[in-house]
Image (cartoon, rainbow, N blue to C red; front, side):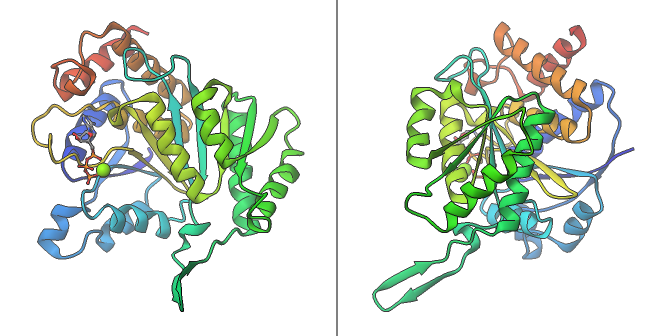
Length: 329
Ligand code: ATP
Ligand code: MG
């Protein structure tokens, strides 16, 4: 049985985690859950946001489900990414019916390099300002690009798009782009293309349906992922995955949402879809696919919706509706 670290964290993190675990239980999936603490509440009690026991728990588990951390998010999630060497951040851009999605038929994946680039934190003041180092190593580039192509192969995707700014960042992004085309040769069945990041920001608005898998460096991926979130509308809907060589951490894109916490009205879909991404990671692809279909069905029908989706149902009502639809598939 897979051992799963569960870190509900703060605010609505706890509520949407309860809902997601309820869905997994109810569709007959058995895991060895081990709960860990982290986040603002823990920090207020004990003066640290991410205790060693929680880090050890995540290290010794097959995967981790994470809810949300409030003010301490950086200390918790950024630290977990570092200690677990979670080098790939995956953000699906997928439109669901009856939502604020700007387009109807979007379904692509943004694969962001998550360990280096301009986010290595090597900044310093100089005489007349400040400078930041941007590190693009061959090893990390190969790792993320290989990951993107493998992801495409395993998920019936047909194309990988490399996003960069190699015309200006000739050495760093020159290397990233060159590595992309070298690795692409190993995947003759997958189409490949590359665009500058500025052009991509525009294409995401003018022809987003043309994308399938995007692979890019840290900062560009950060920005384009949020643009992708805007395209499909609604923080309550978007899951994410952080993947390492031997680890996976899955979390909704939204935060702890203190304004609605404790009321049982948060939308659990992003958390349930994050659990779905975990199932895919663990090889339970049929179940993951069925969860996705069940959520599509719930949204299409539009009878049981949380407030952010225009309804007045509770977090658990929506989770139960997902379970009902799952069982009908
Ligand atoms: P944090 O500091 O933890 O990021 P935040 O105040 O930035 O908290 P977010 O979670 O990022 O809150 O959410 C921003 C807004 O979106 C809030 O008004 C919140 O109520 C709403 N929101 C976020 N997630 C959900 C959700 N799952 N269901 C309903 N509304 C949500
Ligand atoms: Mg926030």
